[in-house]
Length: 393
Ligand code: ARG
Image (tube, rainbow, N blue to C red; front, side, top):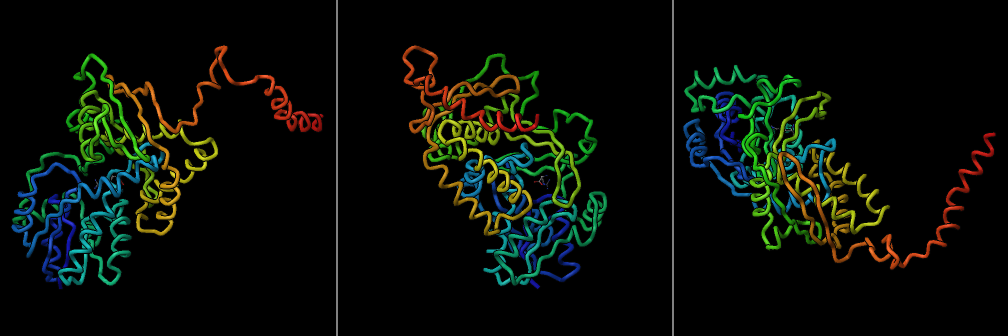
């Protein structure tokens, strides 16, 4: 039996290589997909071979992730439960798709992932595998074996697997759109995350004492410039993660509802994601009409819930994206922000195709608005209230 395994180099998937060999006598093809996590990929490759992989693949998918996944999330203002920018959730369908491609190319009988049986990630991998390689068997060693972290470490040591003497007690998942931090003392929702849990965002005491101003430019709903300079999305995201983090901005700490019905305390750092989504939302308000905005909010919410629950490959997601793409045609302009001591304040916005009309809304004498028109409008506006309250008496 030949198996292609999504391999991160972490404990779960390192243990999985050996387990697949033991249980199925499998030839394991490991696939590591670079979605912007800062890792030593050479070391990951060595670990894969030391653990028994027959062949290792490294795939640089950063640009694809930014342009085909993150760009859609920005246009959809995607924040699950209003908070989580879906960093881990968005990467899963891309990773699974790359693994499935290699499985098909190598003539594998199965695809495999290292997800546990109580998280959301299993749903995301399994659904993408189902859509891209429906004939292959799906193996999930950690889920099947019902192992916990302690069991895994014991198994790894017994089998001489190359696991790191844990660099961190936390379970980390990282990519260019954000970093998820779980486990250890964070499982107590009252415990404050210690400074060492964070990598991108500085403790407030260490942030600069002067605010920093930035101008973010969007074209058709996608970020295309920073401080007036045209840049790729990858570059903009990288810079915003750095600058936002320096100012202590970008931590999310919330109680999240997993698909299976469990609540979990989740801690993330995602400066660029929060800056880009919030500035994008602001720019949309300059351009789209009230009904358009309000309807889009419903679409955006459904979009985020679908991505969270692993339904990237579902035709409904594509249909929602068709609506979202249409809505973004005129979302071009700039938003100015100020970062300071863990906060981000929007301080201005401008757009060529703005629906905002200063010459009409202005309080000054030059206003083009004829206030007399307000009288009839206001009278009719309250007509229904007048009639319904009368009938109650
Ligand atoms: N709760 C988040 C989600 O479901 C983060 C998952 C992080 N995954 C991990 N293996 N640590 O998207």
